[in-house]
Amino acid sequence: MLDGVFITHLKRIYHEQGDIYHAIKRSEDSFSSFGEAYFSTVNFLDVKGWKKHQEMVMNIVVPVGSIKFVLFDDRPESNTKNNYFEIVISASNYVRLTVPPGIWMAFQGITPKQNLLLNIASIEHDPREAISVPLNEICYNWEG
Amino acid sequence: MLDGVFITHLKRIYHEQGDIYHAIKRSEDSFSSFGEAYFSTVNFLDVKGWKKHQEMVMNIVVPVGSIKFVLFDDRPESNTKNNYFEIVISASNYVRLTVPPGIWMAFQGITPKQNLLLNIASIEHDPREAISVPLNEICYNWEG
Image (cartoon, rainbow over all chains, first blue to last red; front, side, top):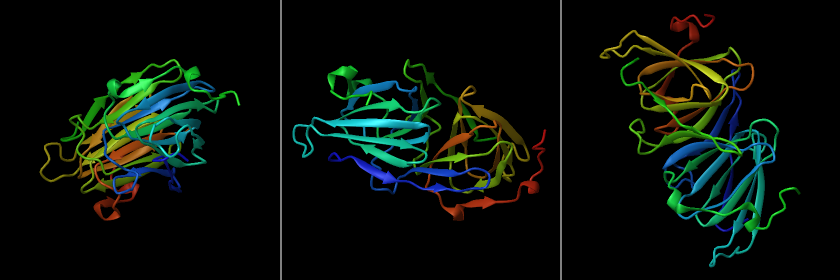
């Protein structure tokens, strides 16, 4: 695990007409502030990334499909500098991934159907606070 | 339309590896406060409801499948008292439905696959502030 990154197990509540899935409550420890909620989809085997936010805290859940997230820590002062963390999140491994600013992230669609994440972001989208680099700039074997 | 209910058209942003879907930003008029985000699914032709919140403002989007929402206004002082409003929301009619406290709501799954809503709720779930009544207590033809 990387310093400041959290995995929180979330409830799926059975309901006869259709289940309820928790995402995040403001009273939870990993909630910082609310800026924006948006969905991102990622096609089968495609990868989005790398991107690093300088201000945004991301709170990510995957209610549909399955997405592999890879995080890379190059923060100079971090105890986990140069470490990677990876996790596959789906409705069956239903957890919330909290990513603080300063961590590189890329993610890959794992199912041939829809792969959908929700990000409850601490600030509104602002392209000036995000840095993107091409996939091959941070070493990771996406075929693996 | 019912007093205090809003429909907001949302952006779907094309992306080669998978599209982005806006849900809500804190700077938008229909945002009041953030209490909790949760998903609810509803099976094909099943109906969840009726429920009326006494405090919660709901901001609802449907990124997957298609859901029919029916709202009924019995607020004594409302200009739209005894009126109904109905709308089908899906990824292809991608809008946000804002429902203030005091409005009855029920909703029905429209596709045989998954029908998924996200509610960005102004307060955390609290069973004491919600009133439920059986489906047949408010007249509506769900077979229609």
